[in-house]
Image (cartoon, rainbow, N blue to C red; front, side, top):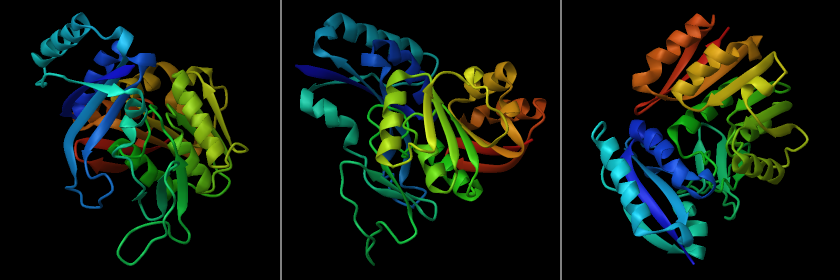
Length: 306
């Protein structure tokens, strides 16, 4: 049996639209967004603006008709936003299972957050090479197909914000938890009571597995659901790393800022520069104030107070 890999290279803005367009064709709604360039390098020019959007289709669903439909779909999208033709690659079962791991290596974010793939051994830092250091907060991750490897700028900006904000004993709500990378980081930085929610069943499973791998099951609860199902309020930190239109909807429909405690902080990420003004308007309309801004290429993240 083989798996058909369908890949489209676009920029950060186009990646989200392409991912949503391809999602109905995937196995279990799994879409991989792979930031091109060297994600482990501290050089700001190491990351390219390009993002590879990939889906995997089992052999029994592959056909010339399916490939033609995908080509036609992307052709019509390309009339509105420049897109290349998709590339198709047939992967053996074992190659598919590891396809997303190829560019995923241990790396550092901020001063002391160390991301460690669960299938690789930890290596201590040496004079010529980075590695685990004394005092590091090490996150062991096996993200599978869930969004949240730590490679994407939107996730990295959230981690930088958490490193600054989290204090021992805090409570944290992680909306759209993905692999639970943010919740795990917050727990290891000292947060005491955490809740991660996601609408995707596979993400919830990956998140729960990662929480267990990191020995944080006593502090982190993972649930499948939407924000409006959460009854708890007054969180010290609420982190939302999704998409700008979804964030705006959470403000307008679900009272997102109401979940943040009086002296709490709201971290917003997943925002393309062109959509930042709309998010800022939603923040102000809800009674919030942007007190800090992070920028990585064409991505923006905000820290908001009430």
